[in-house]
Image (cartoon, rainbow, N blue to C red; front, side):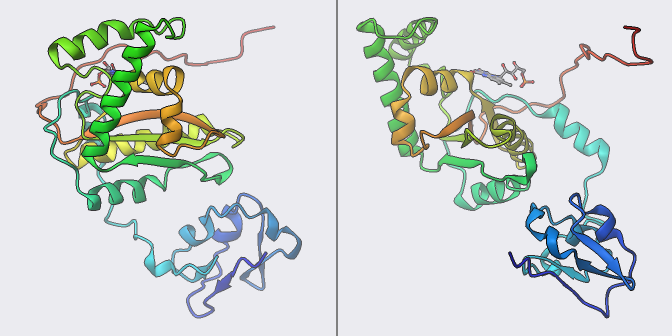
Length: 280
Ligand SMILES: Cc1cc2nc3c(=O)[nH]c(=O)nc-3n(C[C@H](O)[C@H](O)[C@H](O)COP(=O)(O)O)c2cc1C
């Protein structure tokens, strides 16, 4: 495997940070210059820590130009602001229906692609409904399939709570499953990934926070997850989610028809602070 590892000799200051930070010991310092350890290259997981940790931008791997990375100095949010975002983010259950632009969705997904994955596996698949008309189609199909399954007694055990929601949808036009959102994001990963489910959850958490920073609303939808994975899984196939995938979770999103003015106040932090090991 050619990792296209190169070091600009004029920029390299020989600090050795790239070698020290490589999680698999693939880089070594020789005469104060980094180089690849020949027989370890296949261990590279593509994390690019070597590129990120180089203070002078001297190092390139996999043909990447360090000049195209975002410099971190001066570009990071202040901790208090990030804390306000994390505490101020809400589950949004009311949407205007106005679509989120393709540009915004692309920005969200491109950024979320930076979320960590086990062994830097990066196999997470983002199945997105960009077009509100497709979302409407999915909404209709989901409710009508659920209704048929309930009527014909085919609803799986434990899923009969959907009956009340179908009645509410028919009588009052209430969409408890997708909350009337114009978009849906389904995050899945090949079931044999080292940490498929966790990778998906991390990606969705990143998505949720960035969306909140952009003034968008999101909702983790357990009801959509149950409906589409346990009751009508054939719909997942029609949405292009591979059968070999573990579906991590689903999130609806869109422009909120609600504004929150302050954070909520939570006092239920559970911490088990370990002072010493209990005797065996
Ligand atoms: C895994 C998960 C599944 C959820 N599923 C639903 C759901 O199906 N419907 C819903 O209205 N809210 C759902 N929620 C939202 C929670 O009810 C919400 O996070 C909680 O009430 C706290 O509100 P907040 O997110 O605004 O702080 C879900 C949240 C999580 C984390």
